[in-house]
Amino acid sequence: MEKTINQVFADQTEKCGPRLAVAKKINGRWEKATWQEYYARARATGLGLLSLGVAPGDRVGVMSDNRLEWLYTDMGVMGMGASLVPIHASLDPEEINYILNDAGVKVLVVDNQERLRKALAAVDSCRALMKVILIEYSPVSIWPEIVIPFSQLQQLGEARHETDPRLFMKLSQAVGPADVATIVYTSGTTGLPKGALISHKNIMAVIQALADIQPPYALESDVTVPFLPLSHVFERVAGHFYGMVVGITSWYAEGIENLVRDIQEVKPTVILSVPRICEKIYHRILLKVGGQAKWRQRFFWWAKGVGEEVSQHLEGRKKLPLALRLRFALAGMIVFRPLRKALGGRVRWMVVSGAPTVVEILRFFHAAGIMIIEGYGLTESTAPATLSRLDDYQLGTAGKPLPGLEIHLAPDGEILIKGDTVCQGYWNKPEESRNLMTEDGFLRTGDIGAWTTEGYLTIVDRKKEMIVTSTGKLISPQKIENRFLGDPLFNQVVVLGEGRPYLTALVNINLEQAAGLAQDRKIGFDQPQDLLNSESFCSLVDERVARVNHRLARFETIKAYTILKNELSRDGGELTVSLKVKRKKIDDKFKMQIEAMYAGEQEKRGTASQGLQCRRLSRVLP
Image 1 (cartoon, rainbow, N blue to C red):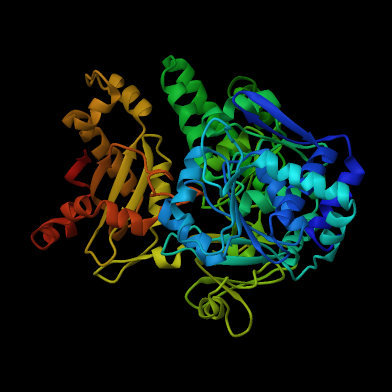
Image 2: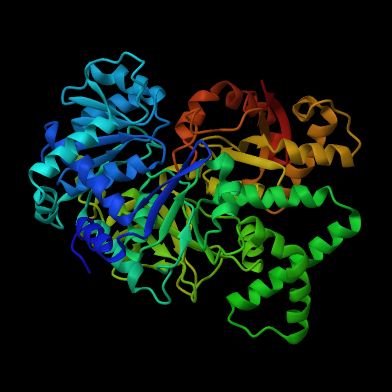
């Protein structure tokens, strides 16, 4: 296999040439590029940056939603020997300023005026920054001299190529496996982000590991509809780079809000996702079922049970009895075929990574004929470190280590990883880089894991997010949150309780589901939002919380909760780009509401210890 991603790009262009490589929907219209066009535009971008004074080894930033110019910048920057620094588009100006300064970014590419304003707010304090490149440039607007349009950048590159047609190829070939391809800043769930140094060797090690797995995950004929941010290492490495090696055609969705429409149009065969998306699809199906006639509802739950039975047989590598096959054929025609159709009708598998997924949801997709491939990894391991195999899996686990990786568990359960996919350390942070590794060369992931008896890895929680109550109980909040998310009434749940005598939670309610339940219970309302202030409806929520509590150990039960009227979001700063909760941000933002749930806890401790399953304190947050 090739030594760098630059060589992969050149070889794939020569092989596939006029075949469609990438497309992106912008304002309802697909913008497309063949492999030849993709390479030419990436080359123009890289040589344009060279003309602006960017040299091999320098850093170039990109702050943009997914679009073709993002890809051109990525391959152009690495192709001319520099390192790309992706900056999540949802970050605030202070965080952007920190990353630009920390990485010493020389040129920053942004997509629109909103991101340009964020960038310009940081310009005065950024010592290295020479130019800001604006993709959606309007000649009508007056911009500072530091701003130039992306089209002008490419014109500079094309002129440079005409002068020296072999320059870009020479620069690309001069890049070696040990050179830094990209500096990816961690999402910062526990503090300031750190820039992980990811080399071409790291990227190629992941690609080689995926290529060594049989049967293969992807084929040249596969089509995908990426929607996760390219600024996240999972989408960029496991999606963009691995897809490039295979020769997949990628149709980038216009946005999550239009994802189903774009999927139905493109009809992908493979999808990369996160648990949150699977949860939303599953809950929407249950909501639709809840509005149907009672006999249809009964048939759905019968079919779901049949599907789960089939899923368990397949997982256990057992032959399906004839009677079960016949029942499953009937269930498939009426219940599962519409789900496959909603996802375009051709999906063979979905990779779901970033956090554990509720097993009930996994089984439902599996029963519908859509294999959910779970995986585990982090920025510092260049995305995937473990994956379920198409022919070797256990639902609810993160699979087994990728070929070439060694994974151990420390005495406290921390997952430790060794292999060529592990990053070189952190940019400008020698002490943190030293602490990142054990003495015998294993990456400290900060995640707690466990092995199943069959050798599959399960993820318990983040080490720093494990809750230790004042009574000394060690609790995984993620486990409890996933129990709640199996109920479609709950949109989001954050469990709290560090240093406290009992657990509490912040919850966000699915208003569509709430409205359906209220109608069934004959609870009156004008707008679904009104239900959050209804005593009758909140009593129903009490029942659902008590139902979850019943499946938990006493010390894991939720004793009080507060309903958040608005969803936690990336834009609000409560979620990372991969939709993980920023718990420190939550603690700070909702401090008053959290304290209210523990107000007078000394007096109430006796009640809590008597097994009270849910105490409503400050329930609805304005």
